[in-house]
Length: 98
Image (cartoon, rainbow, N blue to C red):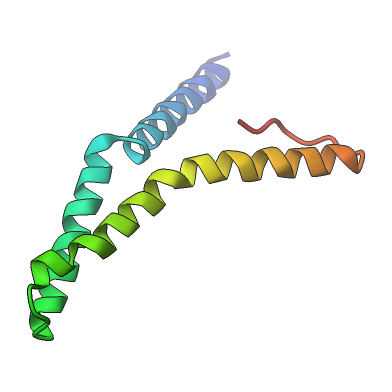
């Protein structure tokens, strides 16, 4: 009986870690940090290669990166939905996707 209890505690601990990781992946703080570090890296690079107005010119690629990361969950859901539909139309039964 104690072995089962230990296994349940381990599964619950793993689930908490997975939930925390998912919360971080979708958090505003993570996205803000990605934007900040992307802008800084591009700005420094443009400054190092002596592009005029490197900090202004770093805005567009940073915005593009931000848009791409913000739209990924939308495209992931569409891709997974299509994948499930394709598998179901072939007669395969698979696990559920969100």
